[in-house]
Image (cartoon, rainbow, N blue to C red; front, side, top):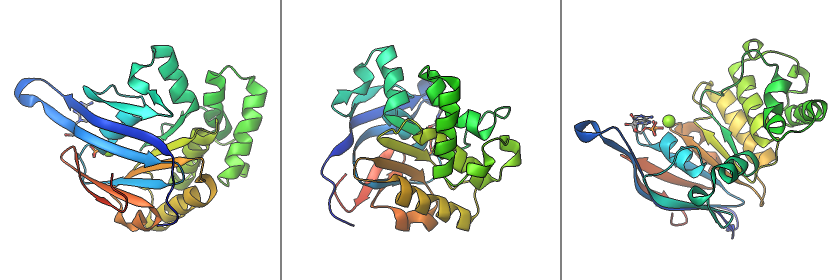
Length: 235
Ligand SMILES: Nc1ncnc2c1ncn2[C@@H]1O[C@H](COP(=O)(O)OP(=O)(O)O)[C@@H](O)[C@H]1O
Ligand SMILES: [Mg+2]
């Protein structure tokens, strides 16, 4: 690992989330403590069903925990008002969903512009910014194309361009290589690490794809909703 990043981007303590009632109840995330730092790319790995997506959702302000706290930039995010939480999601965290969540009837540029539209920016300014963001991920020439015309790797990059358009300090990717072949998946992660990670940013990647482990600064393992061991700095 390179020089130790100093600042904590995310601090989670005692995070717990269950689904269902009675005998059918499952504890998807069970008393998880986790720290992610600025300047690092943190991998959360574990088998399917181990609670990775649920944990990311709790950290990102998408899903409210049953217990525990998430601190981001000194804010206890789950004590924010509904409006402040929405602002937090819009300004501080970029989330790349496992299946991209691109709108099929919108072009690449329109998809990427959405966060700025939600911030009430002018449509033309937002589209211009979207084209710049697409250029960063190497898709300048695909701005006017609908998602159906894009390869899986290109759709993944459009989703990344959309996640970074507002320059969030934290970027979260859920299984970013799941639908990609090995080479494309590695290219995407290498790209994210080289172009997007800097000492003011924190990247959290959930994966069960061992082929990309070499890009992690630190890896934590999940099993049955718990973090079972940490590699490198203690989680
Ligand atoms: N919305 C939900 N409703 C009910 N059960 C869920 C829901 N989301 C996740 N689970 C359950 O929680 C556990 C962890 O799921 P998940 O966080 O998706 O794991 P992973 O991303 O590691 O595959 C699984 O048993 C899953 O079935
Ligand atoms: Mg998942």
